[in-house]
Image (tube, rainbow, N blue to C red; front, side, top):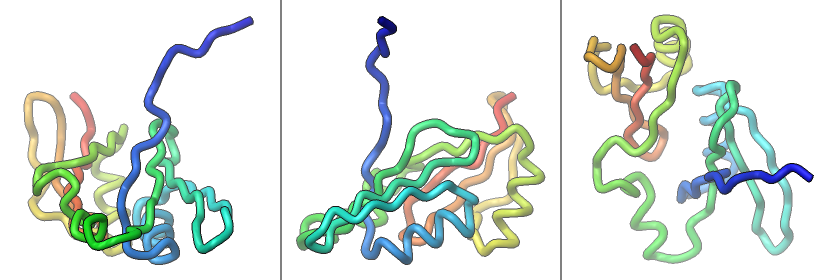
Length: 130
């Protein structure tokens, strides 16, 4: 019997609306969407980069405290890191799809990187590791 060691499978990202968020992640970032109705207005919606990895579980804010966290789950720091094997290709595709980059691409010792924001203002790095 094979054993699966512990690993992070998903990270919850608090959002305002399921459909708006899943469309943005699908159409702007090319993420793969899985959407299951749980009843009572709740859904299990995950978005995953096409190359695999940790899924984002889109969690619709249920109260004022959760709503206040939308777009600032990391206090304004870069929150998520999207790795690519071709920065120029993905930067161009994301820009054409309407993703707002906050800076020009830069070369760092660890790779080529640029910060962008998702539809709620969470900051991400698009990064081609060195």
